Length: 127
Ligand SMILES: [Zn+2]
Image (tube, rainbow, N blue to C red; front, side, top):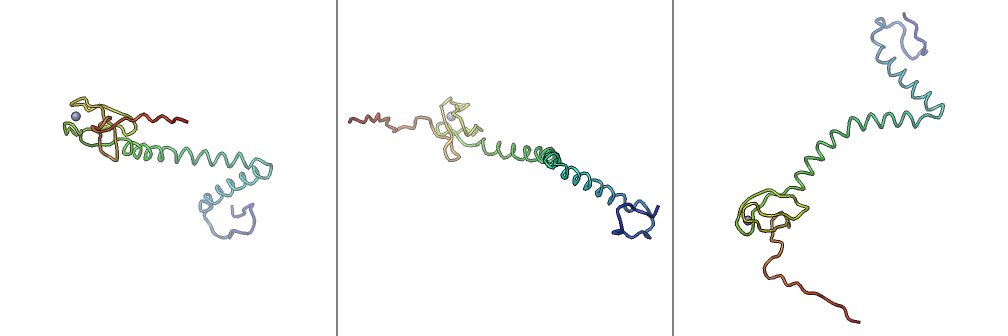
């Protein structure tokens, strides 16, 4: 079996047919891809490869993204009232598990929802 149908690009005196099986596989793949493209199904090939890529990449991204998201959305700090250290979600308001003070996150620290000294001014525009 020294004759290859795909032309003179490869030396025929090499010996050992297994050597080219990988090349043949990729040539076949290329040929399939090319023929798909030739009959206007390049999008099919593209979406196939995109799908393969997504299947491979998405779980990895999801894994790291989840870790990043957890790190980003969970903050550890002390209660400003009773100094208890605990974790809380960054996005929402929460209560101190020890003293029940309503708190929220602000620049990686817990602050009281209604800090002392805050004056709620109702501004009314009169025209
Ligand atoms: Zn507290």
